[in-house]
Image (cartoon, rainbow, N blue to C red; front, side):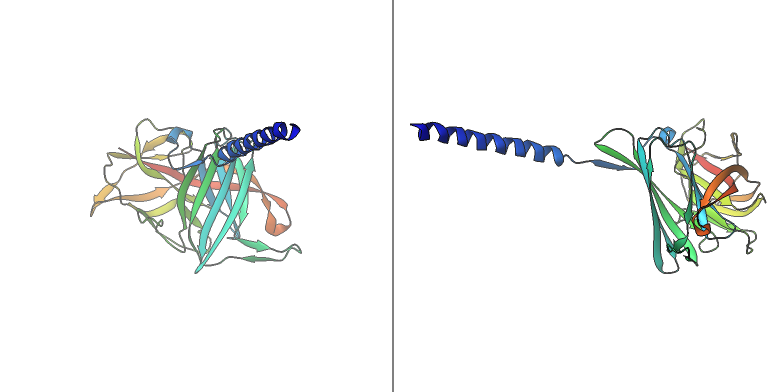
Amino acid sequence: MKIKTIVPLLILAVLLSGCTKKAETTKKTTPTKILVNELPQKDRPFTVLVPHETNRLFTLYTQNADKAKGAKLDLEYLSGDLLKGAKATISAPIPNPYIKAILLGSCSTGGKCTFDTDLQSGTMKLSLDLGDKTVVHVLKGDFTFIKGQKNLPDGKVIFEPSRVSAKDNLILINSLGLPVQPEKETVLYPIVISSVSDKAVSGTLTINQSGVTDMAIFDGTVFKPLKYTTKDNSLVVTLNEKPWQKTATITRDDQKGAQESVNLYLVGPIILYK
């Protein structure tokens, strides 16, 4: 009699256990949507890479990322034929602005460093946790070291500088977001040229984009009109702009963690109005 009573109870326990495991499995496998460049422009952090006069590192500067619960940075770039990269996890609370020096190379625990040369172009991805556990917003943009490659990888933007000297380190970059919001709707992406000095950045900027009614450039405070011409279905800007600047303190991994105050020089963003 006891046996007949116990067996159904055991079967019931096994069935309940199976249901619990199935529910747990279903919960764990809930997919996370990864949305690339779908975050509204007004919510995107203004993000740039600024060269250093040594060419051993560059500085990541991102503004208005402090609303995120956390972020991940993933950089890839070409050094000659080799694909190099750097990753960083940014924990909340995120400072505004967030500033980080990124070594273009590697250092051993003993402090000996090797640095990448023949720098060309790369991709920057900023993954933002905005509090929704089912969605990760990824902002993705390209950049190029103008000495090594004058066009962004998508071929839409080319900058031919008027002069190129050993000290003229310039980076052409899609800045993902904007420091202030424009009055009208834009197309393409924001274009920034970052520099190591306050000298005017001069040269020819060619942009392959249709549906443009006007163009503007940020001067550090506001967007102002920018003159351009059209040639062979491209927009052509004769650029001769003094950079605006931000002052930052960075940590030099190639100098055993020494602190350094640097000026970050920026031309743009340049935006295209619909």
